[in-house]
Length: 298
Image 1 (cartoon, rainbow, N blue to C red):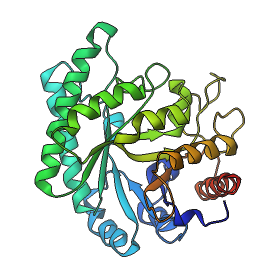
Image 2 (image 1 turned 30 degrees about the vertical axis):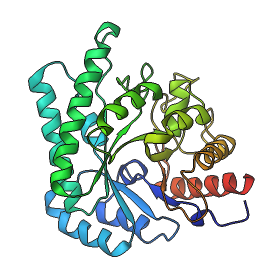
Image 3 (image 1 turned 90 degrees about the vertical axis):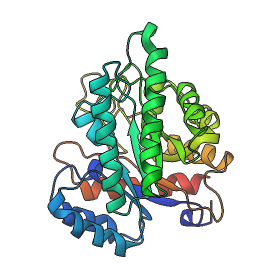
């Protein structure tokens, strides 16, 4: 592709994944001051830093998203728990996250389903999940126009979530969309090998509900690797599932469904994490080069 990729999409990045360590403001500035990026996704910010972070993001002209998944996973919350108190606690936490997202200028709030129950209880789990998402969407609507998105994770390798596969995610989206058109799904290239799904299949399946995408990789074949499973190793990691070719195919599929295209500015966000001893800045630069090489192959 000879045209600039920035004419077809905004490139974003999940900040807490790329910079798991370091001073918050300093690492945010690495992204904010890099004109390659048009979007950034942030996790919950300590209360005493929110004003400074909000001002920094407001001047950056970046499209801001909020990753509620970090809170869910860190605190082992479950928005499809059959135990009412547990589910209510998770919903309350996500509503609080929506409030914080608004205060930081985010346009999208993301979450994920809880652990997959036994097969005979999956239907109940999906019903509870849909109800929880509707409650979160209702809260968001009362705050303004923030979009709510559910990320599709693996079922039986690492996170072992109720949602995916992608077909199941679409069923949830259909239910929630009946009441809240601003609800959508997040497809992550990193998760597709874990789901045993191809990019074209996943994106075609989710296209009517697709709200956002992540690009990254995973380790699936080597169980002894420190990044085995859903750890988002940097592109170029030995044994990783997604490299330039897979990113190229993902971009082609995104173009085929109209998510990216000439004049469009939907966000395609890196989700990559340094391995031990690696530089975050080098990993981010490597991800940029991977995307540029994939784009050149289109």
